[in-house]
Length: 181
Image 1 (cartoon, one colour):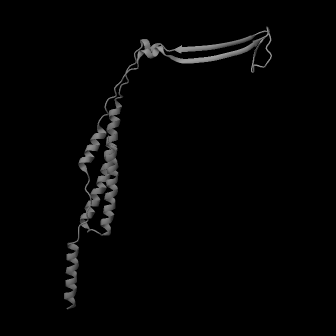
Image 2 (cartoon, rainbow, N blue to C red):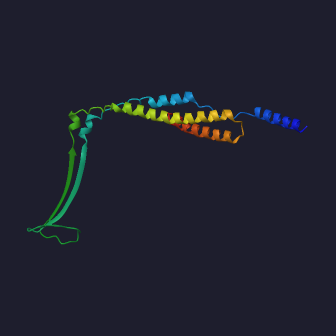
Image 3 (tube, rainbow, N blue to C red):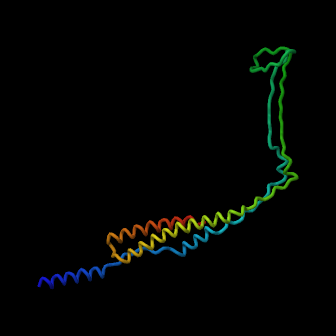
């Protein structure tokens, strides 16, 4: 009789374990990842180069203004600090205003800046670096999914696999957000 009870309980446990919900993990958004890597690989739109007007050469590049206030006594010059000082043999007051122009824009045309050829290589290297980082996270997600196939929901290993999957998807979501225009 004891054997029959043990077998019944063993069958109940095995059937309960067999009918338990499998550990579920979210899937990786592969289409969005491929689209984001494509966005990173695209060249930015060319900048429209509008040369500055040649008439800017008619505007002064520098303006200097000064004032001079002094006294002359036939021997030397003295600078007067206050109007109450005694001034002998004359006063010298003067103003100066000076403008400087750079006339080169009137006849020289500036050349547009050219795109450096190594920018394409730098963009490709940046895309490769991002793809490697995403691949590491996808690998971690796949390992978590393979572990989830072996355990049931609510199991400690299932929660660990779900945590690994969530952390991998968080990094992938950050890459997807960075690729948005």
